[in-house]
Image (cartoon, rainbow, N blue to C red):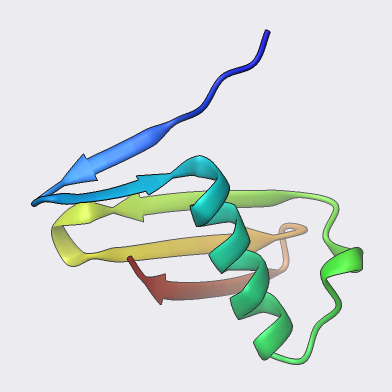
Length: 65
């Protein structure tokens, strides 16, 4: 089975694929290697236009939707 999650809020659309890609970019921009990611948890707060993420249970980051 293939699935895709799309979050729609206040006229904006964000797909699961886009959210994951942006988290990886933010992780890399913080000086880390994307290849080190084994686990990625995303927490989307559309009311703040923010996505918070945790990589490998030990790195926390955030970015704007």
